[in-house]
Image 1 (cartoon, rainbow, N blue to C red):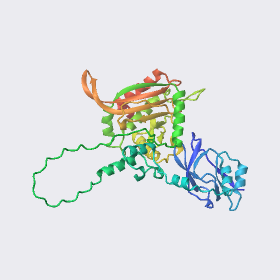
Image 2: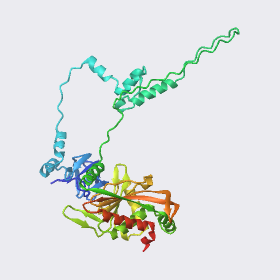
Image 3: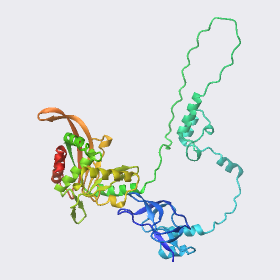
Image 4: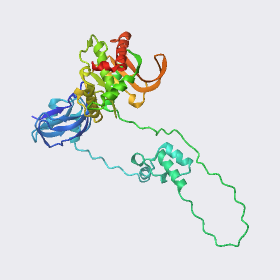
Length: 432
């Protein structure tokens, strides 16, 4: 009997998958391992592979969201009844009902009597926003003369403005050249006419916005970070770090490193070393228990078009700076291409969010569950500092630790930051 293909769970937080497109068509012969479709999850765009051989008899959902275990296709032998397979399997996403509706013949509607004048005028009615109509009226323009650039040729504000500008820049008609006349005294020059200014008119037509559909990733970001912010009692600790010695060491390291080490690599390595010394920070809230994680797995927030992805550098405390750099670069590239595997984004015990490359000096971040802390890292700023009783130029970086007070107390967070600061202000500690 034909078998149904259901939407699989492709990540630990996935509740539904969004089918972007099918790579196989109905009637195609498929083998186990063939890629059937591309599916957008809450974390990445992934390929949906077939786990059976046969013919793709029916595609239940051509594109759009489907809940976990919802029926998306039917595979079997050529000529088999795919409807029976869907009915016997049951379906939670309405695909079977939609399929039935598709198979029913369309019912012919009784021809309606045309209404000559009203229908014709409705078809020829100019499509324009209320704001565009008001602007055209105030400028004395026939709205029908304006070419629309909106949806289905709809005239909007920018079209009227462009039409007015075009009218202003159009060359004025040249007067006829007069015949030669006897020389007479030149008349007095007429008074210079002031240029006319088109009065500004704005009636607040409500057309200056667009609605963007919420992606699967953005839905999960909203749900998980909302739960974190409103369920975990956050508190924040900020410290300023002199990065002079880290900057010096980075120059020396980059003369021998196979990859160019960044300041973020030093931050990850220093945080991992400090976490090893302060296991309370490397913990997770599980409701009835607090999990003290023995592995140090640092999540690194990466900005993508739809939001944030957090690939994880596993065992960061025992990796070298060059290994961390290579891994972060690779996963950041995959994140921007939405090619990260779910395994790349699970297992984090601590998270770092670095906005220093955007010139942000200081900010606070929302804890990334199931972590109990997240470190917000700002840019390095040159500023005057007092050093050994004298004013000097310092290269200072502010970091803010967001803590879940259910797991971490203020003193524990402060001790972690103290160790983190000591490591970056004397980074030779990372080498021993």
